[in-house]
Amino acid sequence: MPDDAPPKPVEFMPVSPERWSDFEALFGECGAYEGCWCMWWRTTRREWMRQRGEANRLAMKRIVDSGEVPGIIAYVGGEPAGWCSVAPREAFASLNRSPTLRRVDAEPVWSIVCFYVAPEFRGSGLMASLLAAARDYAVSKGARIVEAYPREPGDLGPPQAYMGIVPAFAKAGFAEVLRRSPRQPIMRWQS
Image 1 (cartoon, rainbow, N blue to C red):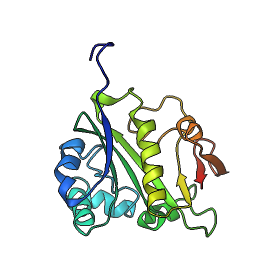
Image 2: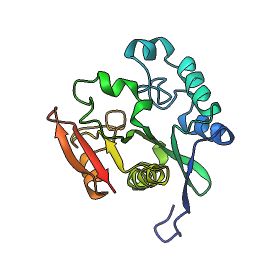
Image 3: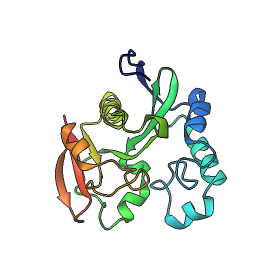
Image 4: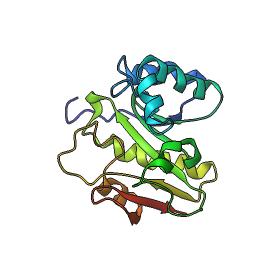
């Protein structure tokens, strides 16, 4: 798009059965990264490996078809362009099995665990917009605390930065509350 072209409108929508085909189109044949279909934090590692690919796609489809909203899709000019997984922390059972990301306290939190931006939209600032939209969505559903687990920037490519990067969360008003790993803090936004 030329520099002087007007920006395309961006909107954010929760994933629903009616938007499933947009989610599939965005994730493509590979399920975003390596057949994940954003099931990494929702299952055990053994289950994830066994389900990798089509079975992960079907598992996510069951979640969406049940009426549970697993996250939001960003649309740029009406085209699905990005994804952010946001839900109550209880939806992500593997977080508590992680020595680095286990619970900080007993406070009820919503968690942001994953981003996926289509290659043609990377570097456009869409991840920051998705982050704000995911936080706002969680708050609209009653969240008082939104938690995230971004990585420190460095030589991270898209697959390694799937949980976001620390500066983007800090800019969005998230503060570090605990760090059990040098490269990955637990950050929170509180209302």
